[in-house]
Length: 487
Image (cartoon, rainbow, N blue to C red; front, side):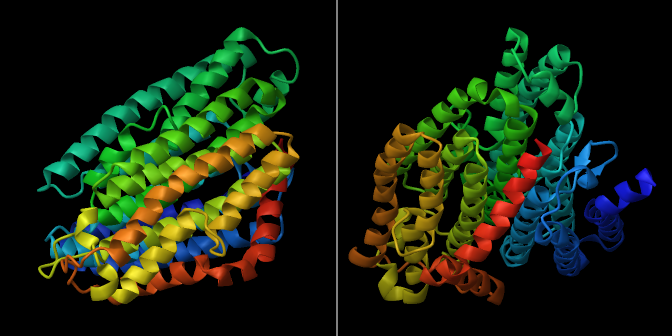
């Protein structure tokens, strides 16, 4: 009975596993001729997986009934919220890929299969109830990501991005494993429930080091300062559809995993890890903002923007409350839409021959030559800056509100002040598009998927997005509450 119930709870993962293996065989038999068909099937599989996980979120699933395989896996509302974002952004990343890779003669049938396996690993990460499940999911996701970063084999920048990501990822995995071994050594268990029980009281020095190393390994995955150094190089060098994927799905998975580990496994020792989170939050906000100011490449600028936004999300984690966790989830949902829209817009910046335009100077006067594209990109930039009435403001507002309610008033005040720095480089992009002389470089045309995703993202982050605040807030509250029930 236990085994049957466990299989029911992991049905989305089974679907992704079987579909990935079948599509891998199809890719081997048909070579690259069927790459578009395989991509379409992969999108359908991700949609089907989303349908399977949605009921857990709508019902607010939590507690022992959500545990599978003796607590190693949790199919609760929190995991469901994160998986819906992961599967949605992964499907969007697949939809925009064929046109890009076909233009470079590099469309391979393996690409959608790698995305499926990465999504499978990320789903395991956010559902982890044990350090072993956590690590298996993390490595499955990471191994696919290393290959994706180097997917353009004839591009030196892509090969360099893949190599850097692999080397630094291996270092982060080593740090994480060391932290996990220390945690196991001083608690006597790898399950989050057992670790939480063992840490409920006075904390041994060795266990504290374990917490520090585990959080350091996870900080690399979310690209929080001081483990952010890989992000600009990988974002710039990886193919644009892959960068779109990296900026959304893995970021969501890593943030959700960090929340589960900190609030569930290490929940009784908030004071031990809060200082680490506060430092990472403030450092990420400042370094991300200052690092973006001098960038001439728009993909590198967006990399520093992602570091900056991670800092704001970590403020919610520092609160260590249900409201803080809910605020993080709301911010994640809005950030996913903003990042997806931003990178789709970047993909649409092409010369007449189809070559990508990445230099910020080349989008000068874009409002005069491509007014619709410029308007959508400007809206996304203002939203990322947190300027009302765009929806990006709401994400920052709920995070700061949660920090104030948790008596972290100084942290919230510093975060609000530092957000002004970040607004500068976003507004600079808008200024270049609307007030500089036209460079008249962007002349390439994009397919329907790019236009559809860009405008869906723009509508979501527009003032119309505020119509969803109650609905999104209720879902986030339900997911956050499930996390604390587990804790």
